Image 1 (cartoon, rainbow over the protein chains, first blue to last red):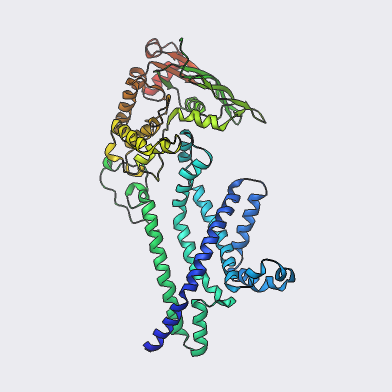
Image 2: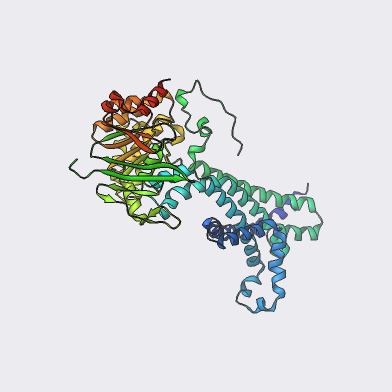
Length: 252
Length: 257
């Protein structure tokens, strides 16, 4: 084992880890805001808008992210109109370009996750809100959104982890993040195995932290869904049951 | 019958896909009335209750709460719709609804459920809302469960929390939609005791129920609904004792069969 080489490689990769994180945070933030609008359009029921949102989701979920990234960075620049327009200063920069690609894509996926969360809100609880005099934004803010968010969180954490890994695509449009720098080191040293192992460890550690963090949030905001037998059978009175019901851990 | 009725419902009609569920039901409730609404399954009694706070929009008829009539306007394609959703929201705060399946908000604790309406709909000061909510939970006997989530309570406890939630709005009328029908038999008693206590306080209540004992002993008026119409209406003694209605006789004997 060449520990000197490994630690040198690790050092170089860690030095660019902030770039990976910046890519990730930017695309999650922009994609999240985008997803809110797309979800709203998707469930608005406004003729045209709903179909537009569905088409958006289909296009970005249905085509490879790599091709989307190439199209935006390499493809769009072949048009002089784009190069002369106000968007060019943004798009010509590989970092910006890849953030936009990733955000557009995760926006589509996240919109579907949010929609699933909204659909899982029990009609009864919405009705209870109406019966107490809530409507419109208050009903959404106090009842619908909090329940939908809790329903969507497990699926959303998967999406967030996928995006961490998807930032590796940035290396293909010349952004020097972890994967890009790893490939550069390999091209000098031909030690593919050691270098990529180092890179993989960095992604694993980052995702481990993200997963633990989101799990912590989930436990905090949804204590009512944790580990109690009657979380699976709501309303089943434990004190009147014949005995404690032993149920296997719910896979999450 | 001199005072303005606390709740007045006139000639409610409701049809689903051409099937008439309610065919013209009217009902006046005076302050302090406890009215049991009985009827076979499918007779329209729950739909009637839900029409009062417009969770179902009646095709025709009007609802008046303490003298204020909910304004309706004709809807395109037949029927009617509320003219002002603001008015509907406001009237709903005066009608406390208790559902068969409790419908507590699953992401909130019992206390949060009870505080929610006064705090975020009536926009009253938090400290006041919390103090009142705790007093209400004490009254329905689940003060020790205030920080529990609904999923961790028995059905009877959930229903009592739901009653506290409705009471927290200080409604003029309480509407109970089969409040004990989803409960295990041994849990029915604890909810009925709360209902009885509320009746003794002089609250105006409409109770859709299958509990004959409750209808007979607690309510001061019994309304029997059959096929979308009021078939019998009177004091429990009149409706149960004289058994004027042949259909009511069949309904009651059917229950004991």
